[in-house]
Image (cartoon, rainbow, N blue to C red; front, side, top):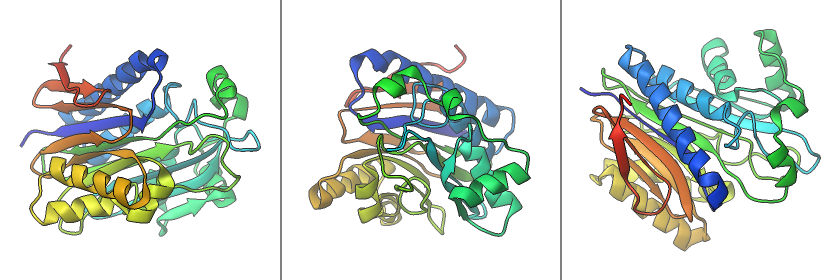
Length: 295
């Protein structure tokens, strides 16, 4: 079967001046993750590579360019999950790590735990040779100026040629958040989910507290298990979140058969998908552009 990878750069009111960089960034991340799959890498390798590319891009709220909390510090959350084994690793409130998604994978592969938080996560990072980066190296001038405004999460889902799925999410959280605040991003069933019988992999973005309340990723896959397409499952679940808790957001989903969707109820969401030699992408509602993946 053909491998598929989908990424998002966050669902929020992306201003016009940031739109081109947001689209360019998700396209580059999708190409990067897709190249991993094309070279024989696993879905897990691909989502980590794609999310690392987004973390390294200052346009997005993850890693370099992440938001600041109320004390002007960078606190990051990330999670990664392997559909083949249901193994998962997560970190929350970790300070000044450039690529928290890779630290989350290390938690999955090098400890008996699923999540490490705060000081413990940073101590673990140091113990395996991942050094903290000074705050001023991670914070952009734009972020300093926009401290009080909204911003959002990045994520990736993939299925490899063997039919195995994986997902990953990374974020700096909400601007001006309370110290120690943890949103949906590092929580299984909320921001990411792979169902037990492997109906698909999901990464969510949007208002974290709303996503937590309705367990959005779990809700999407429950609809898929009942026979809905990934697109319909995403649409119904986001509609429910809006009706029930007045929350908006976005999702990317992929199934083991390669079916995929990128759906959102916010004003905009930058997304890109690499499938069957085509790079699909968009940022506005109902927008679905494409170009050859080899470009």
